[in-house]
Figure 1 (cartoon, rainbow, N blue to C red):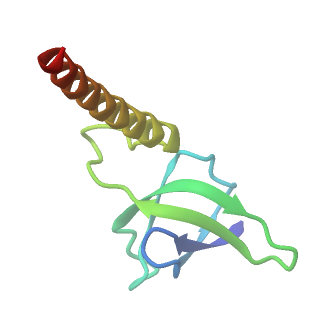
Figure 2: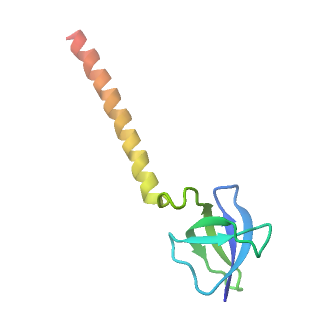
Length: 106
């Protein structure tokens, strides 16, 4: 059994529950844990990264997984792609406004 402490890096870098797993989870998978009752696995988290410690202190960087059963969680690449799409739309909008102003003047 491998022991991991959860790090909630999106929620102020706070430490969460400690879980014991048969194997190291793959990045991008879901794990269940609960910080208030170790026997009650009520919360689901998305595994973003694993930090292996020299002294046996292992950590998993997690974020809360919302919308389970409806869609898969967004990966970092999905978020970057979405942000780039928004920026591209904003630049296109500004470009259209500039071109219309130039057409009015000339």
